[in-house]
Amino acid sequence: MKALILSCALLILPALALEPLDSQALAEVTGQGGVYLSGDLTINDTGGPLNRDGPSQNGYSWQTACGVNTTDKRCGGRIAVNTDQSGGWLVLDNIRGRFAFEGLTLTTRRIDSGFDGDGANFNRDVMEIGLPDQLDYNDVSFTIANSNAPRPTDAGFQQTDIMTLNINGTVNQQGNVLLFPTGAP
Image (tube, rainbow, N blue to C red; front, side, top):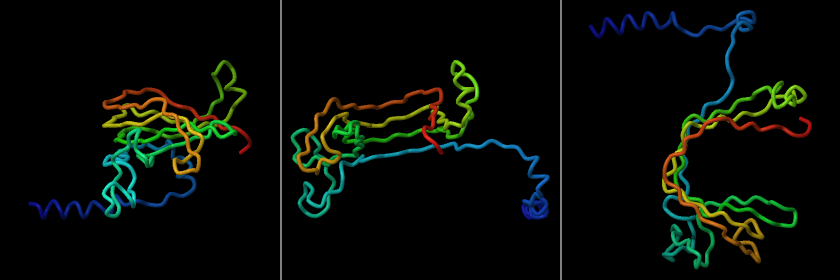
């Protein structure tokens, strides 16, 4: 019986093969563009960076002591954004934990109406980021700070920690974020 089913399947498969389309047939095809993303991102769940002179002093090791009194400030992930030309930096520091999501979408959308009449004047494409329905946090923590330099290893580095957040749980989201281009393409 299994051999009969397999034989029938092998006879049908060539009839279902992909075939090229000519220009006329291709012109009649419609579809929808965009990307649907799911992800699971873990950052420094076993400690900070891998240091050559870490706590064990026996070669490379994970730096796990990232408290206020730690002399080596290279702990966790770090994102620094220059907020002022005079050198101010907004920092997300010591980023750790697991972020997971399903259903983030990326597509383009034409804005040619709405927005109190400004859409018709704009009449261009924008990037639309569709928020995932759910964002899961597992042992996520980060510190919001400001500093005078992008890296803790820079000479004269000073940083003021504003607050540290610890997050566990699920965030339900709805909606889209539109990114409007500026300048000439």
